[in-house]
Image (cartoon, rainbow, N blue to C red; front, side, top):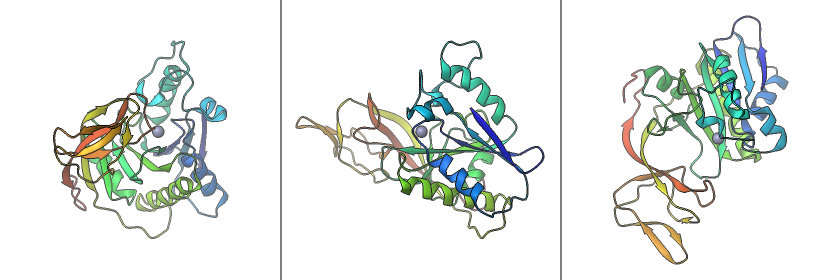
Length: 261
Ligand SMILES: [Zn+2]
């Protein structure tokens, strides 16, 4: 794990990159910020979380870091030990955690708790969609006030430049840099189940409602039909080994300056 603070003093914010080692957009965003002439009004901490996996170009070495919080310093698994260290770095700070993905529909915010403070942070990203993954739990931002953002396809330039834009917007909206911003009033999609399956081709669109009975995936000429209405989120053909992605319901919009949705 690589930790670096820009500015002097104790930081109230932590920007996290590479919880998944092959999702490099947050690291590029940080380096672009560092190379620019932007002046920070307060110190900000940056964490390259899974440095070992990042250097190898892997998602993880032993287990998915995003699924093993709060970790254990005595574990024989790299990411379980790392989770314990990462948790200490994040404690007491507000967290923005950068990811990229196989699935379409980016960019959007992921929250893993109902807390209003995290929803307010989500508005500071300027993005229009929140996916609430509390159903799944376990993410690195779960125990803290924090959000994750999905910026685009893996290590493509598009994801990196989008991550850089989101980072600048977030820092401006949180009062850390001087720059125009517009806090968003995002639509909220709450995950209620996953769609298990191996080797399926995803044929619907993320964030477009699938009606009961509609085909949303296919495999060897066999259609997979929805048994209830839902919005696909993080669904893709190759993104996961054992699931197509997640099923969500649309639960409304976060109002500006109102933490409830
Ligand atoms: Zn990720």
